[in-house]
Amino acid sequence: MYHHLFLIRHMAVLLAAVPLLLSTSSIGARAIQHFDCGAEPPSADVMATISQFHDAAKAAQTSSRSGSAAARARAMVKRADRNLVVDTYFHVVSGDSDAGSVTDQMVADQLAVLQTAYGAHQISFNLLATDRTIHNDWSTGNDEPGMKRALRQGSYTALNLYFLSSLQADVLGKCTLPGTVDSGSDLFYADGCLVAAGSLPAGPIPGYNQGFTAVHEAGHWLGLLHTFEGAACDGDGDFILDTAVEATPTDGCPLDPPKKSCPGSPDVDPIHNYMDYSYDACYERFTPDQEDRIYQMWDEFRAGK
Image (cartoon, rainbow, N blue to C red; front, side):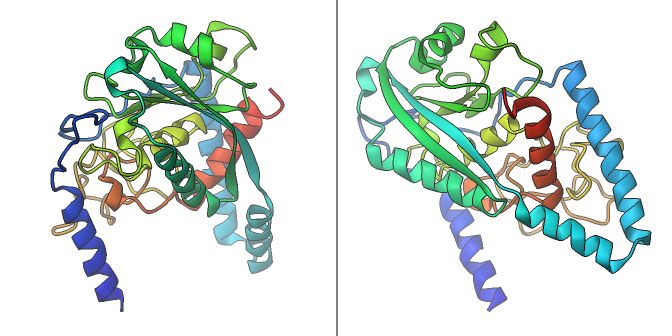
């Protein structure tokens, strides 16, 4: 049975790489050579907090290895009991030439993809509103500050996703990381994620049209770094203990042979992790330690803000 499942997934990955026929009213009608995310690097204070969480996780791991089975069981129960509901706003921004090309079904399917990907980690998204704006500049990512000041809703605990019909520079998405932010400040309004609308489910971007760009970008908003952070085989990488070391971002979904950017590592690269740059059909999971980090970063920077 496992072999059959592997073949099904492998065929899905191959199909994802086949260029799609684009309609005359298509959104983002462009070929993406590989995933590219424009996420800003974390600030020094946020990086210091991430490092502190990482050091604490390493100490806890050492203690757990020498601890009792009962202690490990208590930790598992604590993880299973928590949950997070994120107020969410969708902003669909199109130009005159592609107005209406993002359908209500695409929006609904995008929400379902987010719910499924994060639901395994007791995280859900409470979609409070979806608005639509026609603006030729904003739809390309120009005047991002002006667009966000006009459209952003909710507090610092609210995820604002901006689906742009013609996001430029071959970037599929970009997002802010959490940090220490004053309500009403420029950083407050900058908070949120830009996503190429062509990456929504049934969108026209080959390889990246199953809705997982939004999953990846929301991961940044919740406090996660790329799995290939640091682009090296030594050091702390993404500061997550249970993601394999990775020196280069993944292109496509290299299964045979598997991608291994760090030959000295016992593990292959985490190409199925949502925080890599793989094809949508290749994505499968966050790790338990990534889940822990999301809750830590939420409590530190967003809860009650």
